Every structure is written in structure tokens, then in C-alpha cells.
Amino acid sequence: MIAFRHLSLTLGDFALRDVSITINRGDYYFIIGPSGAGKTVILEAIAGLHFPEKGEVLINGLNTTMVPPEKRRISLVYQDYSLFPHMVVEKNIGFGMKMQKRPRDEIDRRVDELLMQFGISHLRNRYPGTLSGGEQQRVAIARALASDPDILLLDEPFAALDPIAREQIIADLLRIHREGHLTIVQVTHAREEILRMATRCAVIIDGVRMQEGSVDSVFEAPESTAVARFIGMENILSGVVGAVTSSLASIDIAGVSVIAVSNVSPGRSVEIAFRAADVTLHVSDDQTSSAQNRFNATITAVIPLGGPLTQVHLNAGFPIIALVTSRSAEDLDLSPGMDVVAAIKASAIRVIENKLNT
Amino acid sequence: MAQIPVLRDRCLISFSLLGGLILSLTVLALLNMTIRELSDIPHLLQVAADSKVIDSIILTMAAGANAIVILVVLGIPLAYVLARTDFRGKRFVETIVDIPLMLPHTVAGILVYILFMKRGLIGGPLYDIGFSFEDAYPGIVVAMLFVSSPYFINSAREGFEKVPVHLENVARTLGATRFSAFLHVVLPLSARYIYNGAIFSWGRAIGEFAAIIMIAYYPMVISTLLYYRFTTGGLKESSTIAFIMIVACFAVFLVLRYLSRFIGRHDDRV
Image 1 (cartoon, chains in turn orange, yellow):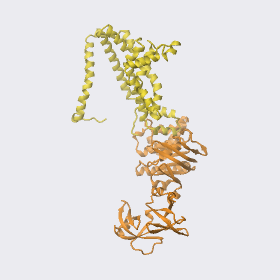
Image 2 (cartoon, chains in turn brown, orange):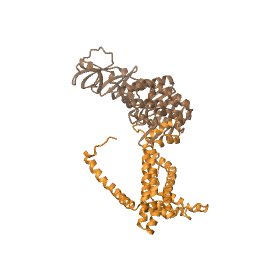
Image 3 (cartoon, chains in turn cyan, brown):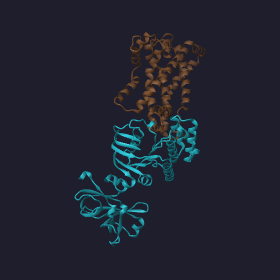
Image 4 (spheres, chains in turn orange, red):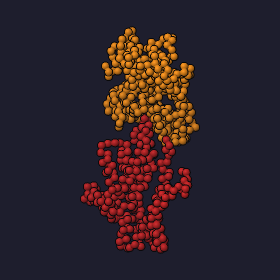
């Protein structure tokens, strides 16, 4: 288990402020946030490459705040792979064991094993400069695993890979995580990776930990608008809570009443967030939808996303963004100026109590 | 490297012509002397066989090499600290490193002399235990060390700065101490800069005159010998010594330049 307790750290223009996170043994833990949010610095701090100004780092319950990186059994793989350019692949992979002064034959055996495991035996005598991005990535991960770490840190491992190489690496990492019972901490700004791979995650924005928990809890129940925006809730609106009856709150948004599942207290200023994908559009109000929220709206823009989906911008007294399949946009002949009914289930709307506005 | 068709590129042609001017000045000076010297081969051979001249050239190169060895041992750690850390007063330290570069050589000579003379701050106590810098080999080495140090330290530092700090970080997470990471990753990757820095500073050390004669007129380094013969024996004798020194330096530096092709070569596309 790795735990950060109220960690603060300043590096040039960048600062981590009072960050607390807990990573359990065997987690595939994601640290997520926009680019430039300091995710790499957190990995480096876990690895022991930066000493915090305040707070402490606990590994397996022991205070390791001042333990140097070489004594932590934590391997780090950077986004640029950082292979040693003056060593061939097998020397790169064997480097950690050599530093740990393991016997020569043990090193050779382990390197052979990893070369096989990652399907890169044919590259063993090549220099990193002659390898493709995907190959370098494999060597970098093999090198990180060779010294048998307790924790593997990955900095945006898929950012520079083509789709095929990416799929292979994802499969490899999931296998390593499953079979090796390894704790993996990965940073990313890509949402798909998190939903696919993570067991738990933390959202870091501007050096502050906004939210931590299971992937479901973060993606279904963002606690702040910043997190809601980051996890892809396109619709974020401000309003005031009216009546609340049996866990259904009526929230006044620009004079329109929106029903959401929540036990928030009446009279409070809140923000609501929902995904564009949770908005369904109907050409006429035929009452077949069971959604509690049905708004008469006018289409203001229809934006094809270049794939199977089309984004529709609406005005219902307040702006709504909806996502429909390009096929149904065509079937319904959606176009700006058209009047439609936008339906949203009360359970799809997340109410965020804005602590600053209380 | 791809061959550029120079003759079709006007910019390259004009640059080559301008660059040729400075080269031709050196070539002219060298040719002029070579022709003069080769016109009297018996005299050339006689001077070349003069044990004083040979000893002096060997002394100069050896003292220079000696200074560089000390410089490598002391300069590499300093260069690494300057490359990898940021601290209050760093600009001040950097300026101190560069001072020998800016000072007139006689000023450098005075500085070294006052510190290492028999009554000097360092020279005094060492003289008491029988170690003299004045008119002695250590005096030559210490003067050379002083004037050539910036070339080496700055070059090594540049080399260290070119090594991505990520490589060092990775090495450490893999179990290398900072020193091991330095030894196995940083040093090999900056070997070329260190080597070139050592050659430059060696060249600078060999060429020193003013700072050396102030503390050690004897034993005579080649510059001192040349100046002595120039003032006592005239142009003919001194120019022949100069010619021999030029040939020796040219040969040595040609070999060193050639060897540098094999040092610290790696594919830096990564």
C-alpha cells in the first residue's frame, strides 16, 4: 500500500497542494487529470525523486518520505521511455539487476525470460535508437519489471503509440497486473484507458486532488464541476434547489424546473451535471419516455463528430448538449431551428453541492 | 551525412569564401614558416635533435597532461553539481569558474604566484615540508591548471546537461544510487564532451606562457625556451623550435581528434 498524507511540493511554477491518496496492494490505480496537472510529478514523488516540503509518503505502513528511490522497489516508466541510448536492449533490461549486484547467470536468465514474454527476443542486440515506439515501450516495461518491483509506475504509456501497438501493450499490462499481482499506478488524461483498465483512481487538477475512489464512484458521482467536466459530463448548469420530496429534488435552472435524484436541502445553490449521451431527443412529446424531465427545446446547432455520433446543441431556456447517433440525426432530420423534446432521467442528473456557494 | 552540392548553394559558397579567409591566414603563416625551415634541413635536424628542445616539449606536454588529470578528477564533480542543481549563489560560482578565462595571463600568473610562492598561503606550508612550486614542475602544473580549468569545467557541464534527467531518474528507480547512475549512465553519455573539454584545456595549458614564467621560469616549458632563444639566439634558432613544436602539436591533436570519433558515440534518437 502507498499512501500520501497531505503532501505538498513545489517545483518551479508547479505545485502539489495538500494531496492525500491511498493506493492499495494489487490496485490498477489511475491518476487522472488534464495535461499539465502535475501527474508526472506525483509519480516522481512516489518513486522518491522529489522530497516533499510537507506531508509524508507511507509504503506498506512505513514512513518512506526520505528513503531514496533506489531503496523503494518502485519502477518508473516515462512517457518518452527513457531507454539508455548507449546500451543494447538486453543491457537495458538487465541494468536494474546489475545495479542490485545479482549474479550474472540470474540476470541472463531473467532477461531471456522477459525478452520472450514481450516477444522482443530478436531485438536483444539492438540499440534503442533503432527501435519503433512500440518496441521501445516494451523494452522500457521489461526493464522496469526485471528488477522485480513492488510497484510499477507508468507515465502516459500509450500517448505516443499507434492503435495496434497500444492494444498489445494494454493486453500485456492487464496480463502483468493479473498474473503478477503487481500494483500499477498509471497517469493519463485519456478517459477510455481509465474505464477499461483502472480499479481505482484519483483526479488531480491544478496540483489539487479533487476526488479519489473506485472508477465507478468517480465517473458516476463527481463531487465537483471540475471533475464532472473532466470525466466528460458535457452539461453543467447552475441552479437553486426548490422542493425535495422522497429523494427527488426540483432544481430551478433559469426558471425551468429540473428533477434530479438527490437529498440536497432546499434553498441551496447547486450545480447539476449530466452526460450528453443521457439526453434523448423526441420530435413530438408522445409520452412514451419514462424520463421525469421533458423539456421543449429548439435546436441551435447540429455538429457531426466525424464518427457514428452527432452532437446536438439545444436551447430549453438553458443550453443542453445531446448526443445522438448520426443515423437517427438523419432519420429525424434534425436541423437548427427545429423544435424537439429533450428527455433526461432524474437518475442521470448529478447534483453537485457547491461548497463555496453555501 | 548527405553530400550537399556546395557549388549550387550561393549561401554556402559565400560562407566558404569568408571562412576560407581565416583559414588561409593560418595556412599562409604555416606554409611561410615550413618553407623557410625546410630550406635548411641540416639546421632543422640539428635543432630537432637538441636534447633541451626535446626535453622541453616533453615537459610541456606532460605538465599539461598532469594538469588535465587533476582537472578531470576535481572538475567533473563540480561540473556535475553545476549541471544538476540550482542553489542560491550559483551565478556567483559560475563566474568564479570563468574568471581565469577573462583575466590577462600575467594577472593569472600573479594570482598563482602569490598563492604558491615560498611565502604564499599554500606554497608556504608546503615549502616548509620540502615541496616547492617556485621554479619547479609543480609550479608549471598549477599555473596550467588555473588557466585551463574553465574550458574543461564548462565543457563537462554542458555534456552533463545534455543527458536527460529522466535517464538518471529511471536508473535510480531501478536500484542505482546517484553515484552508480552517474557512473553508468551520465558519464558514458557525456564522454564526448568530457574528452573534447580535456583536449581543449590541454591545448590551452600547453600554450600558456605568461602565467608559467611568473612562478616557474625553470624548468623551461617550450614557450619559455622559445622566448629565451629568441632574445639570446635570434630569429633563426627560435623559429626552428617553433616549427618543431607546431609539427608535434599538429600530430598529437590530429590523433586526438581522430580518436574522439570512437568516444561516447551512441544513437541519440532516443
